[in-house]
Length: 295
Image (cartoon, rainbow, N blue to C red):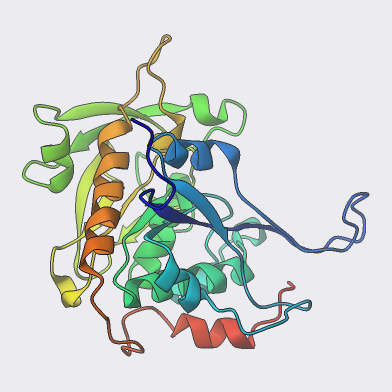
């Protein structure tokens, strides 16, 4: 049966950035914000209405629309993959210029997580989204797994990209293990070179890469801080391969778990206090308001 428009979940999708570039032939010297097609289609596959959450600051900013308005209106948000997280966000100096990341996007993403967390709306992270969530709540990252983690697997191959795979080990007793009963090991795509080094307080690891033991799925403990659902995977569930030579972990249960949490949050509609200090790193929304959208 077709869902009515009013009954469909409204899911925010964080923006990806292409910063102003005078050498670009199209949209010359303009800042672009966009979404990646497959993750939008992944959410839409379950009937959700997907809305990009644009960054409200920058050189062309007008009006008073804020991320808090989006968090109040939408039922949940998914944090995109993409650029490295700037090591300064978690108190480190970049070990290489190539690992500088995107500080502007970090500020924006931190502010998105802060807004939705304070509104009590579910947050799900993919790849960079997992790393950003971990940093937002006080964790740290390997700037480069290959050089900083002994005997690491190849977690990123720029040539094969989403055809690079490795195994994960699902942690028994976690929510993820209950979504996949009987599954202790699975195959996932791997498109990252950064990863969790120290896990954020209040979170649990739900899956590890196997056998090199890098966190691949995390979730905030139920009731931690009196807030709602926050979970993330290091792999891209929207790139699931059901057929072909490599069969990867089915994305369906993960997607429905997140959307069910959004449905529950919609039904509760209780107010949530704002401005709790120390919950999201560096009070991101204040820093975002002060930031200029340029490198």
